[in-house]
Image (cartoon, rainbow, N blue to C red; front, side):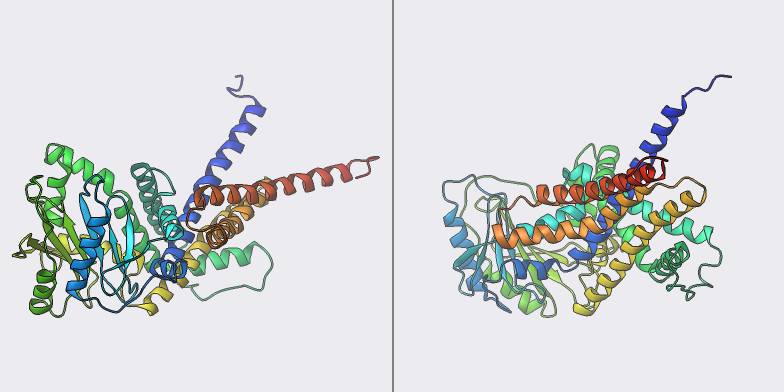
Length: 438
């Protein structure tokens, strides 16, 4: 029976299959590397803009002044739908106000100091969150890769029944594939709880759009806000009739008086300048994984209650804990250092996994030197490309095209490595041919 495909077609198919696998591994590696770097998200912002005013605390009256100043600066623009006030925190001791059109740092008296310029940190976060793709597609893809890590971790344990017994068997001095295999297995064991926690929470965050949209369509008639209301609270009915901005000083004083153990991290004005406006406070709780509790206030400062992220259903508390658990935003610097070390180890596990596959192919008589070179280009090129974008930020400023710089640098390094391997292979073939001098 005649073969369905010619040998040349099969060879091209194998090459395409290998290339697709390399791309998937590269994206998984990129997610791990950027996740490690973004643990220092607040520190990167401070490094990126060292001249922004910093303070450990700010007075309620200064916040009122700052909101009024920002609102005055937007006179004549389309009214903002939300106004966010980032209060000083231990990780980022700055007061920043963000609207639909701008973000500015304010000083301790409420005066606008400088525009917020943290485009590089935001680029790094977007690269990890959604691979610089549109939000729905990018976050869904990252969520699927999170699920892939879970599957790889579980299947790796099943495939290596002695993996825990050999947890401290490391033949690192050997200069062959045995050392690579040992590094892969040992790091995988040592980082297994971390990898599973990061993968599960990453999958939940990344697949939020799909799960939320499906829930809204099937149970809430397509109303996304209604679908999220049982977890994050419902929005009051809107009223676009113009009204004076509310004063937030009484709200902050109420929080200090009634909830002295809660540290306000965000203040949110919903539909500011309208009759439907209301105020929401995000308060951090010590020794809790939740990112905070929502405290709702009317425009006149009347307290309306909490959402229940701190003491509501287990589902609410779990949902509010995913973000901090994934990014290490708890426990201060020691936890961040631990996350960085585990993140480096997880990145190494992904990188060595591909090398192990290439080693197996070589032992079967199917060496892939060009793909191996390309993978070396990826593992070295992506961290180098991130460094190049940071250098671009320091030289060109906040407006540098970070996305283009990163991908061009990554592709250039990878292509150069593969081209060098092809040339080396061609020289080797030529030198092995009788009568042909290289």
